[in-house]
Length: 368
Image 1 (cartoon, rainbow, N blue to C red):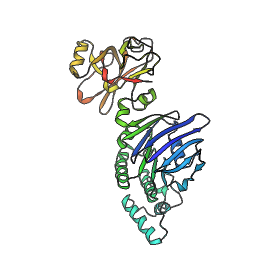
Image 2: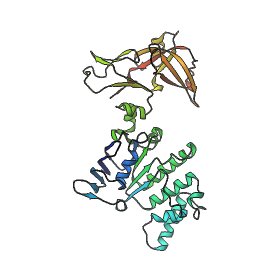
Image 3: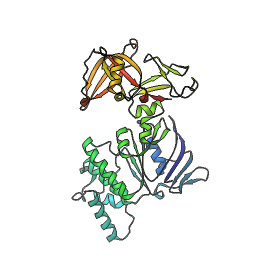
Image 4: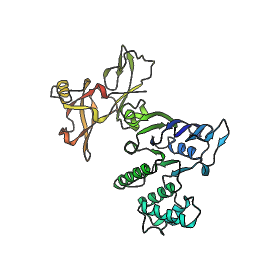
């Protein structure tokens, strides 16, 4: 096991309680701002000291509260890319990179600096200070300095938050190439679900200081398991389960009874909410044969509900149309329903239009 983390630390506003394990991989940690993502990295790096627990890297104990082990940050062999890059402002590009290099012989050190300058496309910037660099250039210098130290573990704290979307895409691809080359276990923390999905195979979700779920990214997006995980992975339509009786869950906000995934589940069991992603809902004008038309459009999916609704607002995206709807039974609530339809599907609806929404059985998210 490359990295094992099991730590607790009490802060004034919440308890950090995190447990996970990684292989030699890029492991993503997804969470909202202030949830404890960066604090987790700081505990691993040795910047913060957990109250209790254990941190092991490649069989080497970095922290163990029971054994009294707490290696200082400089001995942990961890590369940390801070969100703001943390370059030394009074040093040039080559001097910043030199900080991470272990070689003491001047000739060897100079050659290694030159190699990293070339590898990270920093030629011509060697004598410049961070204040005269662009965001992308600063990031490349920070990554070069980090990798020059030959770390056993890399920690990336929101590494692309300060760059625009086009540059972000280029930097992501470059970072993937570099990480594949060095083959170092990497932890990436982000509040951006698309970023985590693109870069990582496995991931965990932190909510209010607690690691709620861990696993393969496809499985978590398909079945997030908790309300907070569903929200963080992009689910826009979530409703509370009012009651569970005779193998069915009453969803009062939607005005439907849904069959449970397991008929043995009772009110005392784990599910408290249901959700459905905006792009998984089927939508037709209400003057068509609702259920039949919806099922014909996706005949491999079984619909467990057809909900009458009215289009309140249409929002045009670059590739999708977003519809904000009010269900027919939602006259006394502020809850809105959201549906997203790709432009190339050809479906067009207008405001105030009456529609029917088909809910596919396999797309319902059962949450706690």
